[in-house]
Every structure is written in C-alpha cells, then in structure tokens.
Length: 168
Image 1 (cartoon, one colour):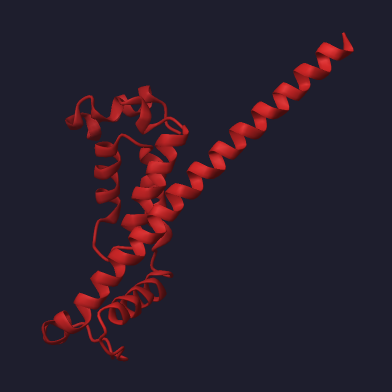
Image 2: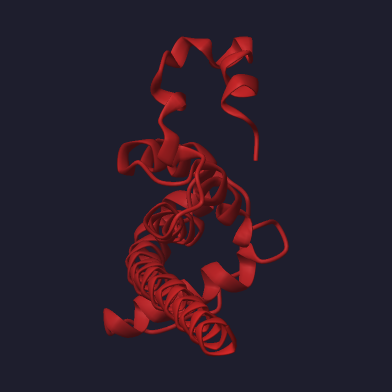
C-alpha cells in the first residue's frame, strides 16, 4: 500500500486536493474492504471503457479501499472478457426471453449499428444482473469471513487468558 505521504507527493494527483487523503481509501478494515469488493467486482462485469476510472470514482464516493476496488476491475482482462461478456449476454437474453444467437463479430460501424440493440440490450441487462449478484455476494462473503475471523481470534485470546489465569 502506498503511504499517504507518497500519494501526497505525486504531482499528477494534486489536482484532486485532499480527496485522496481520506484514511478509509487506504486502510484495510472490514467495511472499507467489503465495499471495495462490491465496487470493484461490480465494475469488472460492466462492459465499458475506463472501468478503473469508474471504480476509483465510486471508491472515493463510497469511502472504501481505493487500491482494492481498482485492482479488482482486472477480473475482466483481455483474456477473461470474451467468456465473461458472452455469459452476461446469455443471462440477459435468457432473462429478456430473447433467442441466443451466435454472432460473427465484425469490427465495423455497419455491424455495430445493425446489432447494437439486438446484442447490446441483453448484454448490458445481463451484465447488470451478473455484476449485481456477484458484487453483493462478494460483499456478504467478505463481511462474513471477516467477522468469523474476528470471532475466532477473540475466542482464542479468551482461551489463552483462561489458560494463563489457571497456570498462574
């Protein structure tokens, strides 16, 4: 994790003022990390350019761990994007009761104009549904695991104290 002083000295980020000096943007605590997972995973499943910028903006807005939320966006990378977004398309088409078609992708304005509504609506609807389910699930799992770890540590501490008290 970068230190606050190191962030403060980066000249290209000084236009943001004191925004990046909020402690929760850099600390590792249950709330900051679980919200970072919620934001980062949600943004990773939405097909759009500059997902990291959106994740960073939402992390600052939600006051959660910035590096984790930005790093999680890389779940969708050039290798994983095709299967993720095809799955999102299938989910969206299924939920919208549309036929799932095999498309020959062509990088041209004509193809985009012809297929935008036909492919775009199920893709973005499915992406929103999958992103929401995965993001909320990750938030709940992080909350549960963190609380479980704290309870376990607390119980172990209590046991050690009892053993010391009996051994004295």
